[in-house]
Length: 398
Image (cartoon, rainbow, N blue to C red; front, top):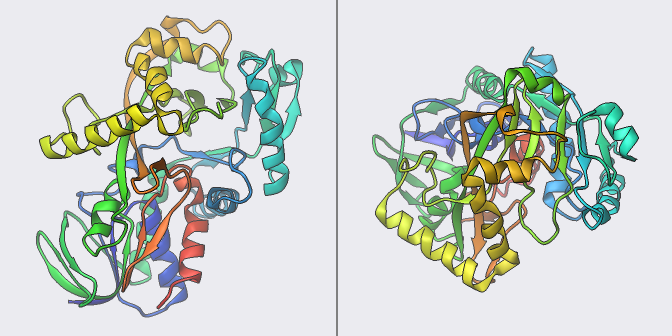
């Protein structure tokens, strides 16, 4: 079998890039290889469904470049195709006086990135979110939206197949020769003109098959959630987020009203020992867990980007009390009985640059001889996906 384009991975990034190629390169043969039996099994189907504006990201980052444009395009796409989507808005609140200093940086980001954001005092914030803790002020982003992410994936599949593309499921890639443009899975072998690696949490492994990105390692972080009991969901109208702590690499727990009007609280960023370690022992293998533990230990003892403090902050979230202690800094009067357990859990694969000994905090792409590898499609990848696809297809070196 011969294809012009072959993708490894059919998550949101793979689907949107494939769709754009089929729209701009009519008549090409294109195939997506997906190791699972359906779409949305991992990050693309497990994320919060929030359409972010990009206010957290400085203008010189790819996240800033992609997020607002991608979110606007995805909102329009959903509206055109009757996919549930709405703009609930988001307040970002400071948890203490020191934390409030970050508000000016966020407003600066908003101004640089063309984001509709308003600096507000406690009274103004509480007119929008009456139960938000807003003593130290905050920001209102009215254009933050929520979407049915799984419906998006399904509709993108329809688009791809209508345009002549194919998706083959249960195809685990085991060998690639990028010089001969040959790829083999557990079931089939085929030739390609150009390969695009959108394998998410396994993108580094796929890239290494062709000698790309040997300095990078993906390590997983587990995102656990609770949700507000049904009788307390009226306490949150949209989303309530914290001002990020500049000393820590991840955002922290927040409150989000989903497209189904459930209020999820989370996620955590707890180091995990498997790229698909959603349960206690699920997704673990001895060799991979040892390798991940070694990489995490290196980050901990060298304290790269304050990683040690992140671990100390996150591990208490394994208990409901520890989770509560973080969450109650955003919503007044939050009590343990407000929170119900939920099976919702995700994995954030975080790229480590072992040569420079740092966490990669932005999108990162590398080219092979006849391939492109999306190595760090981290949050806000779902919001950014249409803009990422635009960037990739407009700059394909073929």
